Amino acid sequence: MMVNITSKTYTMLLLVITLLMVFAYHKGEAIQCSQVHMYLAPCLPYLTAGGIPSQQCCGGLNNLKAAVPGKADQQTACQCLKSVAKTIPGINDDNAKQLPAKCNIDIGIPFSQSVDCNR
Image (tube, rainbow, N blue to C red; front, side, top):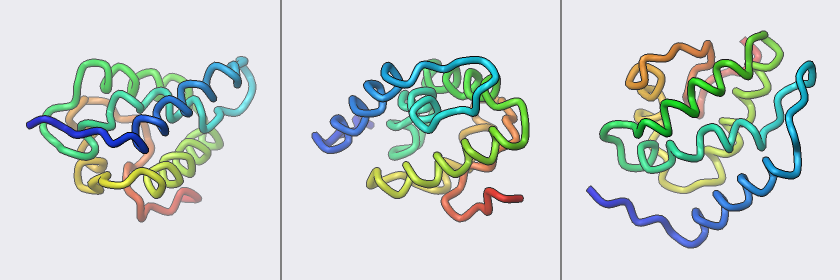
């Protein structure tokens, strides 16, 4: 199944990548939403259409796991995921919930728009 990426979605992805370049990650600092978005940008086709996540998507998820070792970073990443999910139309919550299992990666962050990130 071919995914039609709209110009708005494409623009959003470019913005996320640009933000990542602007906000360099330094060890010891809290994770930035731009980093979370960059790690999971390759997952957009899976999140909207389902199927099998790409190798790049699962690699990004694995990189996200490494970047959020502590509870505070996990909560920040959770909030970032929820906020971006609201801005990109067509993200399927069921696909999001299944992503960690399909990549065989447990990162300690529930993928759902309804999750309470403070828990």
